[in-house]
Length: 376
Length: 203
Image (tube, rainbow over all chains, first blue to last red; front, side, top):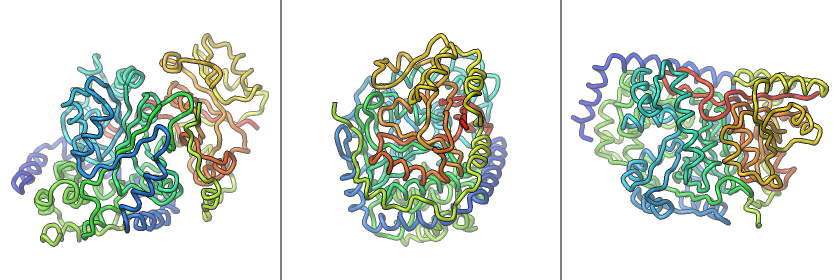
Protein backbone atom coordinates (compact mmCIF):
# COMPACT_ATOMS: atom_id res chain seq x y z
CA UNK A 1 0.00 0.00 0.00
CA UNK A 2 1.28 3.44 -0.85
CA UNK A 3 1.16 6.45 1.46
CA UNK A 4 -1.74 7.84 -0.60
CA UNK A 5 -3.72 4.62 -0.24
CA UNK A 6 -3.24 4.56 3.54
CA UNK A 7 -4.13 8.24 3.71
CA UNK A 8 -7.31 7.69 1.71
CA UNK A 9 -8.29 4.73 3.89
CA UNK A 10 -7.84 6.77 7.07
CA UNK A 11 -9.75 9.76 5.67
CA UNK A 12 -12.66 7.49 4.72
CA UNK A 13 -12.68 6.05 8.23
CA UNK A 14 -12.65 9.55 9.75
CA UNK A 15 -15.73 10.47 7.75
CA UNK A 16 -17.74 7.58 9.13
CA UNK A 17 -19.04 9.09 12.33
CA UNK A 18 -20.67 5.85 13.53
CA UNK A 19 -17.42 4.00 13.11
CA UNK A 20 -15.49 6.67 14.98
CA UNK A 21 -17.89 6.77 17.89
CA UNK A 22 -18.00 2.98 18.02
CA UNK A 23 -14.20 2.73 18.01
CA UNK A 24 -13.77 5.37 20.70
CA UNK A 25 -16.30 3.74 22.99
CA UNK A 26 -14.98 0.22 22.45
CA UNK A 27 -11.35 1.14 23.02
CA UNK A 28 -12.03 3.11 26.21
CA UNK A 29 -14.01 0.17 27.54
CA UNK A 30 -11.22 -2.28 26.69
CA UNK A 31 -8.58 -0.12 28.37
CA UNK A 32 -10.67 0.04 31.53
CA UNK A 33 -11.07 -3.76 31.51
CA UNK A 34 -7.33 -4.16 31.04
CA UNK A 35 -6.49 -1.91 34.00
CA UNK A 36 -8.92 -3.81 36.18
CA UNK A 37 -7.58 -7.20 35.07
CA UNK A 38 -3.96 -6.30 35.88
CA UNK A 39 -4.98 -4.82 39.23
CA UNK A 40 -6.95 -7.95 40.11
CA UNK A 41 -4.04 -10.22 39.14
CA UNK A 42 -0.89 -8.39 40.25
CA UNK A 43 1.26 -11.48 39.71
CA UNK A 44 0.68 -10.91 35.98
CA UNK A 45 3.36 -8.21 36.02
CA UNK A 46 5.98 -10.73 37.24
CA UNK A 47 4.62 -13.33 34.84
CA UNK A 48 4.98 -10.85 31.96
CA UNK A 49 8.70 -10.60 32.81
CA UNK A 50 8.99 -14.38 33.00
CA UNK A 51 7.25 -14.72 29.64
CA UNK A 52 9.56 -12.14 28.08
CA UNK A 53 12.64 -13.96 29.40
CA UNK A 54 11.34 -17.34 28.23
CA UNK A 55 10.49 -15.98 24.80
CA UNK A 56 13.82 -14.20 24.46
CA UNK A 57 15.68 -17.43 25.15
CA UNK A 58 13.84 -19.21 22.32
CA UNK A 59 14.18 -16.25 19.94
CA UNK A 60 17.96 -16.18 20.43
CA UNK A 61 18.10 -19.28 18.20
CA UNK A 62 14.77 -19.70 16.46
CA UNK A 63 15.87 -22.53 14.20
CA UNK A 64 16.97 -24.65 17.18
CA UNK A 65 13.70 -23.83 18.94
CA UNK A 66 11.74 -25.01 15.92
CA UNK A 67 13.75 -28.22 15.84
CA UNK A 68 13.20 -28.82 19.58
CA UNK A 69 9.48 -28.31 19.16
CA UNK A 70 9.35 -30.57 16.13
CA UNK A 71 11.11 -33.39 18.00
CA UNK A 72 8.71 -33.12 20.92
CA UNK A 73 5.60 -32.79 18.75
CA UNK A 74 6.03 -35.44 16.06
CA UNK A 75 4.58 -38.84 16.76
CA UNK A 76 1.91 -41.33 15.78
CA UNK A 77 -0.72 -39.44 13.73
CA UNK A 78 1.00 -36.13 14.53
CA UNK A 79 2.60 -34.48 11.51
CA UNK A 80 4.87 -31.44 11.57
CA UNK A 81 5.56 -29.21 8.58
CA UNK A 82 7.75 -26.16 8.28
CA UNK A 83 6.69 -23.49 5.79
CA UNK A 84 9.26 -20.86 4.86
CA UNK A 85 6.77 -18.79 2.87
CA UNK A 86 2.99 -18.31 2.65
CA UNK A 87 3.05 -20.23 -0.64
CA UNK A 88 4.74 -23.18 1.08
CA UNK A 89 2.04 -23.18 3.76
CA UNK A 90 -0.74 -23.06 1.21
CA UNK A 91 0.77 -25.96 -0.75
CA UNK A 92 1.04 -27.99 2.45
CA UNK A 93 -2.59 -27.25 3.28
CA UNK A 94 -3.58 -28.37 -0.20
CA UNK A 95 -1.82 -31.68 0.39
CA UNK A 96 -3.80 -32.29 3.59
CA UNK A 97 -7.29 -31.26 2.48
CA UNK A 98 -8.97 -31.35 -0.90
CA UNK A 99 -11.60 -29.48 -2.96
CA UNK A 100 -15.04 -30.28 -1.67
CA UNK A 101 -13.87 -30.57 1.93
CA UNK A 102 -15.69 -28.45 4.48
CA UNK A 103 -13.82 -27.05 7.44
CA UNK A 104 -14.39 -25.04 10.58
CA UNK A 105 -11.75 -22.62 11.71
CA UNK A 106 -11.08 -20.77 14.90
CA UNK A 107 -9.15 -17.52 15.01
CA UNK A 108 -5.65 -17.34 13.57
CA UNK A 109 -3.70 -14.19 12.81
CA UNK A 110 -1.28 -16.32 10.80
CA UNK A 111 -4.23 -17.37 8.65
CA UNK A 112 -5.21 -13.71 8.17
CA UNK A 113 -1.62 -12.76 7.46
CA UNK A 114 -1.40 -15.02 4.44
CA UNK A 115 -5.08 -14.78 3.41
CA UNK A 116 -5.43 -18.51 3.91
CA UNK A 117 -9.21 -18.60 3.94
CA UNK A 118 -9.34 -16.83 0.59
CA UNK A 119 -6.83 -19.33 -0.82
CA UNK A 120 -8.84 -22.32 0.39
CA UNK A 121 -12.09 -20.89 -0.91
CA UNK A 122 -10.40 -20.32 -4.26
CA UNK A 123 -9.51 -24.02 -4.33
CA UNK A 124 -13.08 -25.12 -3.68
CA UNK A 125 -12.58 -25.81 0.01
CA UNK A 126 -15.44 -24.41 2.06
CA UNK A 127 -14.21 -22.92 5.31
CA UNK A 128 -16.30 -21.32 8.05
CA UNK A 129 -14.82 -18.90 10.55
CA UNK A 130 -16.33 -19.91 13.87
CA UNK A 131 -15.26 -16.98 16.06
CA UNK A 132 -18.19 -14.57 15.76
CA UNK A 133 -16.01 -11.54 15.04
CA UNK A 134 -14.09 -13.43 12.37
CA UNK A 135 -17.34 -14.79 10.92
CA UNK A 136 -18.65 -11.25 10.56
CA UNK A 137 -15.41 -10.19 8.89
CA UNK A 138 -15.67 -13.19 6.57
CA UNK A 139 -19.23 -12.28 5.59
CA UNK A 140 -18.27 -8.63 5.10
CA UNK A 141 -15.20 -9.62 3.10
CA UNK A 142 -13.09 -7.27 5.22
CA UNK A 143 -9.85 -7.53 7.17
CA UNK A 144 -9.83 -7.84 10.99
CA UNK A 145 -9.69 -4.48 12.75
CA UNK A 146 -8.00 -5.83 15.89
CA UNK A 147 -5.98 -8.95 16.78
CA UNK A 148 -8.29 -10.05 19.61
CA UNK A 149 -11.65 -8.47 18.67
CA UNK A 150 -11.63 -8.45 14.87
CA UNK A 151 -15.02 -6.77 14.42
CA UNK A 152 -14.51 -4.23 17.22
CA UNK A 153 -15.87 -1.38 15.13
CA UNK A 154 -18.82 -3.17 13.55
CA UNK A 155 -22.23 -1.83 14.53
CA UNK A 156 -25.14 -4.03 15.57
CA UNK A 157 -27.01 -2.85 12.49
CA UNK A 158 -24.24 -3.89 10.14
CA UNK A 159 -23.92 -7.25 11.91
CA UNK A 160 -27.67 -7.79 11.46
CA UNK A 161 -27.44 -7.01 7.73
CA UNK A 162 -24.70 -9.61 7.37
CA UNK A 163 -26.22 -12.34 9.53
CA UNK A 164 -29.90 -12.38 8.61
CA UNK A 165 -29.41 -13.79 5.08
CA UNK A 166 -27.07 -16.47 6.44
CA UNK A 167 -29.09 -17.50 9.47
CA UNK A 168 -32.33 -17.25 7.51
CA UNK A 169 -34.45 -15.47 10.08
CA UNK A 170 -35.11 -12.00 11.43
CA UNK A 171 -32.67 -11.13 14.21
CA UNK A 172 -34.08 -8.53 16.56
CA UNK A 173 -31.11 -7.97 18.86
CA UNK A 174 -27.55 -9.08 19.59
CA UNK A 175 -28.76 -12.08 21.64
CA UNK A 176 -30.85 -13.42 18.77
CA UNK A 177 -27.90 -12.88 16.41
CA UNK A 178 -25.56 -14.91 18.60
CA UNK A 179 -28.12 -17.68 19.10
CA UNK A 180 -28.88 -17.70 15.39
CA UNK A 181 -25.21 -18.18 14.58
CA UNK A 182 -24.96 -20.92 17.24
CA UNK A 183 -27.83 -22.84 15.59
CA UNK A 184 -26.45 -22.28 12.08
CA UNK A 185 -22.93 -23.31 12.99
CA UNK A 186 -23.81 -26.38 15.07
CA UNK A 187 -24.66 -28.56 12.07
CA UNK A 188 -21.45 -27.45 10.40
CA UNK A 189 -19.30 -28.31 13.43
CA UNK A 190 -20.75 -31.81 13.57
CA UNK A 191 -20.31 -32.53 9.89
CA UNK A 192 -17.02 -30.73 9.10
CA UNK A 193 -14.24 -32.71 7.48
CA UNK A 194 -11.52 -30.80 9.26
CA UNK A 195 -10.97 -28.30 12.04
CA UNK A 196 -8.35 -25.59 11.83
CA UNK A 197 -7.01 -23.67 14.79
CA UNK A 198 -4.27 -21.19 15.49
CA UNK A 199 -2.01 -21.32 18.53
CA UNK A 200 -1.41 -18.71 21.21
CA UNK A 201 1.60 -20.63 22.51
CA UNK A 202 3.61 -23.80 21.89
CA UNK A 203 5.85 -25.66 24.33
CA UNK A 204 9.17 -27.09 23.16
CA UNK A 205 9.46 -29.64 25.98
CA UNK A 206 6.12 -31.37 25.46
CA UNK A 207 5.24 -30.39 21.88
CA UNK A 208 1.95 -28.96 23.17
CA UNK A 209 -0.31 -26.49 21.38
CA UNK A 210 -2.20 -24.01 23.54
CA UNK A 211 -5.00 -21.77 22.39
CA UNK A 212 -7.64 -19.72 24.17
CA UNK A 213 -11.21 -18.71 23.36
CA UNK A 214 -14.34 -17.40 25.05
CA UNK A 215 -16.96 -18.74 22.71
CA UNK A 216 -16.30 -22.48 22.81
CA UNK A 217 -15.79 -22.44 19.04
CA UNK A 218 -12.22 -23.62 19.52
CA UNK A 219 -13.44 -26.52 21.65
CA UNK A 220 -15.83 -27.77 18.98
CA UNK A 221 -13.37 -27.06 16.14
CA UNK A 222 -10.61 -29.08 17.81
CA UNK A 223 -12.67 -32.03 19.08
CA UNK A 224 -15.39 -32.83 16.55
CA UNK A 225 -13.80 -33.21 13.09
CA UNK A 226 -11.65 -36.24 12.32
CA UNK A 227 -8.75 -34.10 11.14
CA UNK A 228 -7.18 -31.21 13.05
CA UNK A 229 -4.86 -28.69 11.44
CA UNK A 230 -2.89 -26.21 13.53
CA UNK A 231 -1.43 -23.20 11.76
CA UNK A 232 1.11 -21.28 13.74
CA UNK A 233 4.40 -19.42 13.52
CA UNK A 234 7.93 -19.73 14.84
CA UNK A 235 7.79 -17.04 17.52
CA UNK A 236 5.04 -18.84 19.48
CA UNK A 237 7.45 -21.40 20.95
CA UNK A 238 8.28 -21.33 24.65
CA UNK A 239 10.81 -23.54 26.44
CA UNK A 240 8.32 -25.32 28.73
CA UNK A 241 4.63 -26.08 29.15
CA UNK A 242 4.68 -23.95 32.31
CA UNK A 243 6.06 -20.96 30.33
CA UNK A 244 3.38 -21.45 27.69
CA UNK A 245 0.58 -21.52 30.31
CA UNK A 246 1.97 -18.31 31.81
CA UNK A 247 2.11 -16.76 28.33
CA UNK A 248 -1.55 -17.35 27.49
CA UNK A 249 -2.62 -16.20 30.96
CA UNK A 250 -0.58 -13.00 30.56
CA UNK A 251 -2.03 -12.46 27.11
CA UNK A 252 -5.59 -12.80 28.42
CA UNK A 253 -5.02 -10.47 31.37
CA UNK A 254 -3.31 -7.78 29.31
CA UNK A 255 -6.08 -8.08 26.73
CA UNK A 256 -8.53 -7.22 29.52
CA UNK A 257 -10.25 -10.60 29.72
CA UNK A 258 -8.76 -11.63 33.08
CA UNK A 259 -9.34 -15.22 32.10
CA UNK A 260 -10.71 -16.46 28.85
CA UNK A 261 -13.53 -18.97 29.22
CA UNK A 262 -11.53 -21.82 27.71
CA UNK A 263 -7.88 -22.78 27.57
CA UNK A 264 -7.11 -25.79 25.38
CA UNK A 265 -3.80 -27.61 25.67
CA UNK A 266 -3.44 -30.16 22.89
CA UNK A 267 -0.78 -32.82 23.36
CA UNK A 268 -1.87 -35.47 20.94
CA UNK A 269 -4.81 -37.24 19.27
CA UNK A 270 -7.40 -38.88 21.51
CA UNK A 271 -7.76 -42.62 22.17
CA UNK A 272 -11.42 -42.90 21.31
CA UNK A 273 -13.29 -39.95 19.82
CA UNK A 274 -12.07 -36.68 18.34
CA UNK A 275 -9.45 -36.05 15.66
CA UNK A 276 -7.58 -39.11 14.42
CA UNK A 277 -4.72 -37.04 13.04
CA UNK A 278 -3.14 -33.70 13.85
CA UNK A 279 -1.20 -31.65 11.32
CA UNK A 280 0.83 -28.70 12.53
CA UNK A 281 2.24 -26.21 10.04
CA UNK A 282 4.74 -23.71 11.34
CA UNK A 283 5.32 -20.56 9.31
CA UNK A 284 8.42 -18.39 9.02
CA UNK A 285 7.37 -15.64 6.55
CA UNK A 286 10.18 -13.31 7.47
CA UNK A 287 10.32 -13.97 11.17
CA UNK A 288 13.67 -15.73 11.23
CA UNK A 289 15.95 -12.70 11.08
CA UNK A 290 18.65 -10.90 12.98
CA UNK A 291 17.88 -7.23 12.42
CA UNK A 292 16.24 -4.75 14.82
CA UNK A 293 12.77 -5.85 13.73
CA UNK A 294 13.36 -9.09 15.62
CA UNK A 295 12.17 -7.33 18.81
CA UNK A 296 8.68 -7.48 17.28
CA UNK A 297 8.67 -11.25 17.77
CA UNK A 298 8.33 -10.73 21.54
CA UNK A 299 4.74 -9.66 20.84
CA UNK A 300 2.18 -11.94 22.51
CA UNK A 301 -0.69 -10.42 20.50
CA UNK A 302 -2.63 -9.12 23.48
CA UNK A 303 -3.76 -6.10 21.45
CA UNK A 304 -3.28 -3.70 24.37
CA UNK A 305 -1.17 -1.35 22.23
CA UNK A 306 -3.93 -1.17 19.65
CA UNK A 307 -6.50 -0.02 22.20
CA UNK A 308 -4.07 2.49 23.74
CA UNK A 309 -3.21 4.05 20.39
CA UNK A 310 -4.95 7.44 19.80
CA UNK A 311 -4.95 6.86 16.04
CA UNK A 312 -6.54 3.40 16.39
CA UNK A 313 -9.10 4.81 18.82
CA UNK A 314 -10.45 7.01 16.06
CA UNK A 315 -9.96 4.99 12.86
CA UNK A 316 -9.24 1.45 14.21
CA UNK A 317 -8.36 -1.06 11.49
CA UNK A 318 -8.10 1.60 8.81
CA UNK A 319 -4.61 2.24 10.14
CA UNK A 320 -3.09 -1.03 9.09
CA UNK A 321 -3.01 -3.71 6.48
CA UNK A 322 -3.70 -7.00 8.27
CA UNK A 323 -1.86 -6.19 11.46
CA UNK A 324 -3.16 -2.84 12.63
CA UNK A 325 -2.20 0.14 14.73
CA UNK A 326 1.19 0.53 16.40
CA UNK A 327 2.48 -3.04 16.52
CA UNK A 328 0.94 -3.53 13.09
CA UNK A 329 3.68 -1.42 11.53
CA UNK A 330 6.66 -3.69 12.37
CA UNK A 331 4.52 -6.81 11.84
CA UNK A 332 3.72 -5.53 8.35
CA UNK A 333 7.40 -4.87 7.70
CA UNK A 334 8.24 -8.45 8.68
CA UNK A 335 5.40 -10.39 7.11
CA UNK A 336 4.26 -8.28 4.22
CA UNK A 337 6.23 -5.35 2.83
CA UNK A 338 8.60 -2.74 4.21
CA UNK A 339 7.18 -0.21 1.75
CA UNK A 340 3.66 -0.72 3.08
CA UNK A 341 5.04 -0.52 6.62
CA UNK A 342 6.71 2.79 5.79
CA UNK A 343 3.44 4.18 4.46
CA UNK A 344 1.72 3.13 7.68
CA UNK A 345 4.57 4.48 9.83
CA UNK A 346 3.93 7.98 8.53
CA UNK A 347 0.69 8.14 10.54
CA UNK A 348 2.15 7.27 13.94
CA UNK A 349 1.83 10.18 16.38
CA UNK A 350 4.87 8.98 18.37
CA UNK A 351 2.98 9.41 21.65
CA UNK A 352 4.57 6.27 23.15
CA UNK A 353 1.36 4.92 24.71
CA UNK A 354 1.87 1.60 22.95
CA UNK A 355 5.24 1.14 24.65
CA UNK A 356 3.72 2.02 28.06
CA UNK A 357 1.04 -0.66 27.91
CA UNK A 358 3.04 -3.44 26.23
CA UNK A 359 3.59 -6.36 28.64
CA UNK A 360 6.74 -7.32 26.74
CA UNK A 361 8.05 -3.74 26.86
CA UNK A 362 8.66 -3.68 23.12
CA UNK A 363 9.91 -0.27 22.06
CA UNK A 364 7.28 0.03 19.36
CA UNK A 365 7.75 3.77 18.66
CA UNK A 366 11.47 3.17 18.08
CA UNK A 367 10.72 0.30 15.68
CA UNK A 368 8.29 2.57 13.81
CA UNK A 369 10.88 5.36 13.71
CA UNK A 370 13.48 3.00 12.26
CA UNK A 371 11.06 1.77 9.64
CA UNK A 372 10.17 5.32 8.67
CA UNK A 373 13.85 6.31 8.53
CA UNK A 374 14.71 3.20 6.49
CA UNK A 375 17.11 2.04 9.21
CA UNK A 376 15.69 -1.46 8.95
CA UNK B 1 -5.13 -50.26 19.65
CA UNK B 2 -1.97 -48.46 20.50
CA UNK B 3 -2.46 -45.37 22.55
CA UNK B 4 -1.85 -42.08 20.86
CA UNK B 5 -1.29 -40.33 24.16
CA UNK B 6 1.94 -38.46 24.68
CA UNK B 7 4.46 -40.30 26.81
CA UNK B 8 6.68 -37.66 28.27
CA UNK B 9 9.42 -38.08 30.79
CA UNK B 10 7.31 -37.18 33.80
CA UNK B 11 10.39 -36.73 35.94
CA UNK B 12 11.36 -33.73 33.80
CA UNK B 13 7.92 -32.16 34.08
CA UNK B 14 7.79 -32.97 37.79
CA UNK B 15 10.95 -30.94 38.31
CA UNK B 16 9.28 -27.67 37.25
CA UNK B 17 8.16 -25.19 39.88
CA UNK B 18 4.43 -25.49 39.22
CA UNK B 19 3.41 -23.84 42.48
CA UNK B 20 3.05 -20.07 42.13
CA UNK B 21 5.09 -18.94 45.14
CA UNK B 22 3.45 -15.59 45.88
CA UNK B 23 -0.04 -16.85 45.34
CA UNK B 24 -1.32 -18.86 48.29
CA UNK B 25 -5.04 -18.70 48.87
CA UNK B 26 -6.45 -19.31 52.35
CA UNK B 27 -10.12 -19.64 51.49
CA UNK B 28 -9.87 -21.71 48.33
CA UNK B 29 -13.51 -22.67 48.08
CA UNK B 30 -14.71 -19.15 48.79
CA UNK B 31 -12.33 -17.71 46.21
CA UNK B 32 -13.26 -20.31 43.61
CA UNK B 33 -16.95 -19.70 44.20
CA UNK B 34 -16.59 -15.93 43.83
CA UNK B 35 -14.46 -16.02 40.68
CA UNK B 36 -16.45 -18.79 38.98
CA UNK B 37 -19.69 -16.90 39.59
CA UNK B 38 -18.12 -13.65 38.34
CA UNK B 39 -17.46 -15.49 35.09
CA UNK B 40 -21.14 -16.43 34.89
CA UNK B 41 -20.91 -19.90 36.42
CA UNK B 42 -23.18 -21.28 39.15
CA UNK B 43 -21.70 -22.68 42.36
CA UNK B 44 -23.41 -24.90 44.91
CA UNK B 45 -21.88 -26.36 48.08
CA UNK B 46 -24.10 -29.23 49.24
CA UNK B 47 -24.11 -32.26 51.49
CA UNK B 48 -24.20 -35.64 49.81
CA UNK B 49 -27.83 -36.07 50.81
CA UNK B 50 -28.80 -32.89 48.96
CA UNK B 51 -27.00 -33.81 45.72
CA UNK B 52 -30.01 -35.43 44.12
CA UNK B 53 -32.27 -32.43 44.89
CA UNK B 54 -29.66 -30.00 43.59
CA UNK B 55 -29.15 -31.86 40.34
CA UNK B 56 -32.86 -32.41 39.96
CA UNK B 57 -33.42 -28.66 40.18
CA UNK B 58 -30.80 -27.95 37.55
CA UNK B 59 -32.06 -30.47 34.99
CA UNK B 60 -35.76 -29.76 35.53
CA UNK B 61 -37.56 -29.60 32.21
CA UNK B 62 -34.70 -31.25 30.34
CA UNK B 63 -34.99 -34.61 28.61
CA UNK B 64 -31.47 -35.66 27.59
CA UNK B 65 -28.22 -36.08 29.43
CA UNK B 66 -24.71 -37.42 28.81
CA UNK B 67 -22.27 -38.30 31.55
CA UNK B 68 -18.72 -39.56 31.94
CA UNK B 69 -16.21 -40.11 34.72
CA UNK B 70 -18.75 -40.49 37.52
CA UNK B 71 -18.34 -42.71 40.55
CA UNK B 72 -21.03 -45.37 41.00
CA UNK B 73 -22.87 -43.36 43.67
CA UNK B 74 -23.27 -40.33 41.36
CA UNK B 75 -24.15 -42.53 38.42
CA UNK B 76 -27.06 -43.88 40.44
CA UNK B 77 -28.26 -40.35 41.15
CA UNK B 78 -28.08 -39.47 37.45
CA UNK B 79 -30.21 -42.49 36.58
CA UNK B 80 -32.68 -41.55 39.30
CA UNK B 81 -33.20 -38.12 37.71
CA UNK B 82 -35.48 -39.90 35.25
CA UNK B 83 -34.59 -38.10 32.03
CA UNK B 84 -35.86 -39.68 28.79
CA UNK B 85 -32.43 -40.11 27.25
CA UNK B 86 -29.35 -40.83 29.38
CA UNK B 87 -26.07 -41.59 27.63
CA UNK B 88 -23.01 -42.94 29.35
CA UNK B 89 -19.93 -41.95 27.37
CA UNK B 90 -16.82 -44.04 27.82
CA UNK B 91 -14.75 -46.59 25.92
CA UNK B 92 -17.12 -49.41 26.82
CA UNK B 93 -20.38 -47.70 25.93
CA UNK B 94 -19.95 -47.92 22.13
CA UNK B 95 -21.84 -44.72 21.42
CA UNK B 96 -21.79 -42.95 18.06
CA UNK B 97 -20.96 -39.71 19.82
CA UNK B 98 -21.63 -37.28 16.99
CA UNK B 99 -25.07 -38.77 16.35
CA UNK B 100 -26.00 -39.07 20.02
CA UNK B 101 -24.73 -35.74 21.28
CA UNK B 102 -25.86 -33.27 18.60
CA UNK B 103 -28.83 -32.06 20.64
CA UNK B 104 -28.06 -33.42 24.11
CA UNK B 105 -29.04 -30.89 26.75
CA UNK B 106 -27.03 -31.71 29.88
CA UNK B 107 -23.49 -32.98 30.47
CA UNK B 108 -22.31 -34.22 33.87
CA UNK B 109 -18.90 -35.36 35.08
CA UNK B 110 -16.42 -35.29 37.89
CA UNK B 111 -13.49 -33.07 36.84
CA UNK B 112 -9.85 -33.80 37.54
CA UNK B 113 -8.99 -30.63 39.46
CA UNK B 114 -10.14 -27.14 40.35
CA UNK B 115 -8.11 -23.93 40.63
CA UNK B 116 -9.28 -21.34 43.13
CA UNK B 117 -7.54 -18.20 41.86
CA UNK B 118 -9.06 -18.36 38.40
CA UNK B 119 -12.25 -20.28 39.20
CA UNK B 120 -11.12 -23.01 36.81
CA UNK B 121 -12.39 -26.53 36.21
CA UNK B 122 -9.56 -28.67 34.85
CA UNK B 123 -9.96 -31.82 32.78
CA UNK B 124 -7.26 -34.32 31.85
CA UNK B 125 -8.84 -35.87 28.78
CA UNK B 126 -7.39 -39.02 27.17
CA UNK B 127 -10.27 -40.03 24.94
CA UNK B 128 -12.40 -36.89 24.22
CA UNK B 129 -15.27 -38.06 26.43
CA UNK B 130 -14.67 -35.31 28.98
CA UNK B 131 -14.33 -32.68 26.25
CA UNK B 132 -17.59 -33.77 24.62
CA UNK B 133 -19.45 -33.75 27.93
CA UNK B 134 -18.03 -30.33 28.91
CA UNK B 135 -18.45 -28.54 25.58
CA UNK B 136 -21.37 -29.95 23.61
CA UNK B 137 -24.46 -29.76 25.84
CA UNK B 138 -26.28 -26.57 26.78
CA UNK B 139 -25.76 -27.23 30.48
CA UNK B 140 -22.47 -28.44 31.92
CA UNK B 141 -22.39 -29.79 35.49
CA UNK B 142 -19.17 -30.68 37.28
CA UNK B 143 -19.40 -32.47 40.64
CA UNK B 144 -16.32 -32.14 42.84
CA UNK B 145 -15.08 -32.20 46.39
CA UNK B 146 -12.49 -30.17 48.22
CA UNK B 147 -9.70 -32.65 47.59
CA UNK B 148 -9.58 -31.52 43.95
CA UNK B 149 -8.92 -27.87 44.82
CA UNK B 150 -5.56 -26.16 44.19
CA UNK B 151 -4.52 -22.53 44.41
CA UNK B 152 -3.75 -21.98 40.72
CA UNK B 153 -3.99 -23.63 37.30
CA UNK B 154 -0.22 -24.31 37.04
CA UNK B 155 -0.24 -25.98 40.45
CA UNK B 156 -3.22 -28.14 39.47
CA UNK B 157 -1.69 -29.12 36.15
CA UNK B 158 1.60 -30.02 37.84
CA UNK B 159 -0.20 -32.17 40.39
CA UNK B 160 -2.18 -34.00 37.71
CA UNK B 161 0.95 -34.71 35.66
CA UNK B 162 2.53 -36.18 38.80
CA UNK B 163 -0.57 -38.27 39.53
CA UNK B 164 -0.92 -39.69 36.01
CA UNK B 165 2.79 -39.76 35.23
CA UNK B 166 2.06 -38.61 31.70
CA UNK B 167 0.20 -35.99 29.70
CA UNK B 168 -3.29 -36.64 28.34
CA UNK B 169 -4.33 -35.96 24.75
CA UNK B 170 -5.71 -32.63 25.94
CA UNK B 171 -5.85 -30.57 29.09
CA UNK B 172 -9.04 -28.51 29.06
CA UNK B 173 -9.48 -25.54 31.37
CA UNK B 174 -13.02 -24.26 31.77
CA UNK B 175 -13.60 -20.93 33.52
CA UNK B 176 -17.33 -20.54 33.05
CA UNK B 177 -20.07 -20.74 30.42
CA UNK B 178 -19.36 -19.79 26.82
CA UNK B 179 -19.88 -16.17 25.86
CA UNK B 180 -19.10 -13.59 23.23
CA UNK B 181 -18.86 -9.78 23.19
CA UNK B 182 -17.95 -9.49 19.54
CA UNK B 183 -20.89 -7.27 18.58
CA UNK B 184 -20.54 -3.82 20.15
CA UNK B 185 -19.02 -5.40 23.27
CA UNK B 186 -22.45 -6.69 24.32
CA UNK B 187 -21.87 -9.90 26.26
CA UNK B 188 -24.18 -12.76 25.28
CA UNK B 189 -24.36 -16.31 26.63
CA UNK B 190 -24.08 -18.86 25.18
CA UNK B 191 -21.95 -18.69 22.14
CA UNK B 192 -20.99 -22.17 20.82
CA UNK B 193 -20.28 -23.87 24.14
CA UNK B 194 -22.61 -24.39 27.12
CA UNK B 195 -25.00 -21.65 28.20
CA UNK B 196 -24.73 -22.61 31.84
CA UNK B 197 -21.82 -24.08 33.79
CA UNK B 198 -22.36 -25.48 37.29
CA UNK B 199 -19.86 -26.55 39.89
CA UNK B 200 -21.43 -28.61 42.68
CA UNK B 201 -19.06 -28.92 45.62
CA UNK B 202 -20.01 -31.96 47.68
CA UNK B 203 -19.11 -31.65 51.34
